[in-house]
Amino acid sequence: MLLEAPRFALPETLGEALAARAERPEAVVVAGGTEVMPDLLWRNRTAAGFLSLRRVAALRGTATDGGELVIGAGTPVAALTTAPDGGLRAAASSLGTPLVRTEATIGGNVVSALPYRNLLPTLLASGATLELTSATGTRVVPFDGFVTAPGVTGLREGELLTAVRLPVHVGFADYAKVGRRNAQFVATVSAAVVSRDGVARLAFGNAGPTPLRSDAVDTAATALLDGRATPADLRATVAAAVDPPEDTVASAEYRRHALGVLAVRLVTRAAVDAGLGS
Image (cartoon, rainbow, N blue to C red; front, side, top):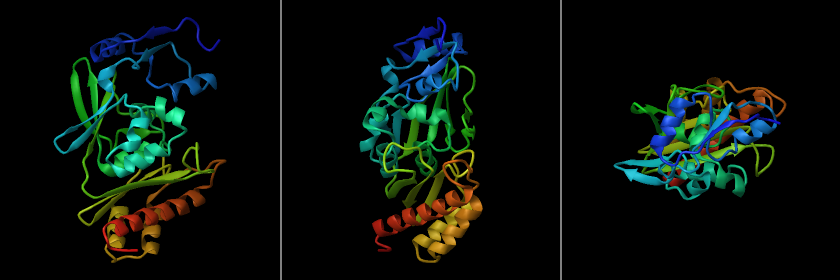
């Protein structure tokens, strides 16, 4: 048996979920289960109990609030494949299989906090913020800095991630990744770009222990966008900024090279979209 008589909470409202979170801090929070259940099966983790958010309708769906797109943390990734943000749409569309996208949630992808997760570079490039809610209230924090180490976040005791907020960009946004095959694979490396008003902002996945961005890279990307720099300049800047892992999938050298390639590819797409290149 993987578990012996686990305690299980199945709230239907956010208030019930927060109360259960406070009462059962040891329980594993689960929504779609695409992260938690394989870990249990492979015995990578144990669980004294579960807090399922599956029935909390308030955590699902999207809305606009001023100039922001607000996405409930329990929203399935499948619903993001038609998102207005091009980077989020591309990242969601390349995540797993149709079945996985139906079950996986944006909140689970964020809180898993692993550097190769699809959605994380898009949130970092977009300047996303997170709503973190507990029984005492809600705080809004930047996604930049929320992931502090692989699998570790800035969530405090008793908090749940309840929503992700992205600026509604009038510009270009995209995402690309490299992996061992073209479907159903974990990203060897990934990158996202947002280009608006002549300024490019890049973010990377599996380029270090946490999702990564760099002011120096953004400066080089913007220079390439408007023709003041070359692709080689951007690749060199990316290579200096990243610190990718080395494992059985790929060497750090390969990842560093691939990240530079993705950066140039995405900025070139942004330039074409803006009518600045071909």
